[in-house]
Image 1 (cartoon, rainbow, N blue to C red):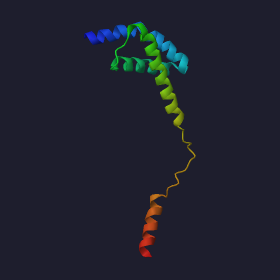
Image 2 (cartoon, rainbow, N blue to C red):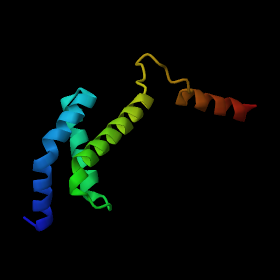
Image 3 (cartoon, one colour):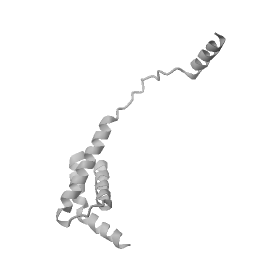
Image 4 (tube, rainbow, N blue to C red):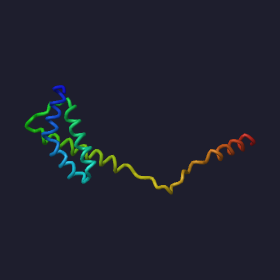
Length: 105
């Protein structure tokens, strides 16, 4: 394992449970909490800003909270479409008939 991988593994082991509990409290869903936790660590570890050891927990929780709010906002914009909604565009056969009538005129 490379030094960077070992560093990440130690970093993750030390803080993952705190971030996961926080994410679970925010989202109320275990799979969402896992996704939020993973994203928080990915963003923190790939950030160009150096991580300060004294504030690392607060930094991770801030990233988790921001990601949760981003996904919540994105989901709010998604509206499920009812199965009963009809496509109001004309059928291909109607287009063909209209073309034939236009050519005849």
